[in-house]
Image 1 (tube, chains in turn green, purple, brown):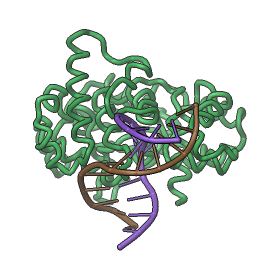
Image 2 (cartoon, rainbow, N blue to C red):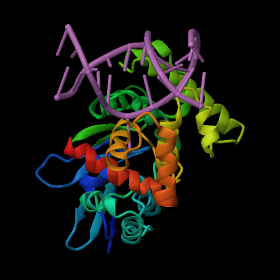
Image 3 (cartoon, helix red, strand yellow):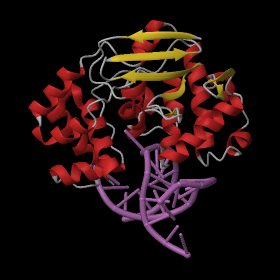
Length: 278
DNA sequence: ACCCAGGTGGCTT
DNA sequence: AAGCCACATGGG
């Protein structure tokens, strides 16, 4: 177990980061502290943050300092991002202030693909449960830490060779087939040395449409210009700009015109703000 | 019982 | 290109 301390970190709030819908394996430590516990890829960790000292502390079962620095996107200047967003669209200011501690985590590509395939037509509490059951059944055992047992997110080979019926037994619904197919495809992409990079690559995965593809671009491939339009963002874009709820294309186009290559950040602030007010 | 959830694939106009 | 609809499950 290693502990890493990161100092002088601005624009960070654990609740914002872990509750804004970008990840599904983190929960409050539940011991009266504002800490979170959870897992990223192969590692479990406990995260604490002291806003007064601007200090982030990671106690983890694995991963080096560089890994966690990158995971929490600590090299990015969010003050500058928020300033630019508000300057280009003052209407977003409330949302930016509300979720001012959001950082976009740099997550594992395969884990992101599977997690967001599961997210389709599903609700967040159930997405979390689905992912935990997959990890428990198929993920390598990490060990016991922070008061519970942990499993890694499964390897692509493991889910690729799983029986679809066994996946379905985890209550994954019709997505079980998508998960198996996507895992097989990922394994074959790894073998041929052609991991998905572009939106087109990702869209060719079965069970991945425009929305999930944008989530994968944003959370798994660091493409912060990607603007996922889900049912919440659809309502928001309709409320704020009067774009018809059916016209997702126009919503994406508008977002890129207004937010440019910062559209992904804008989407996160908007999603978190409006979903919390419901 | 009912509507909905970080949608997508497939079929019909 | 656009409009339906089924899909599997369970939260509210």
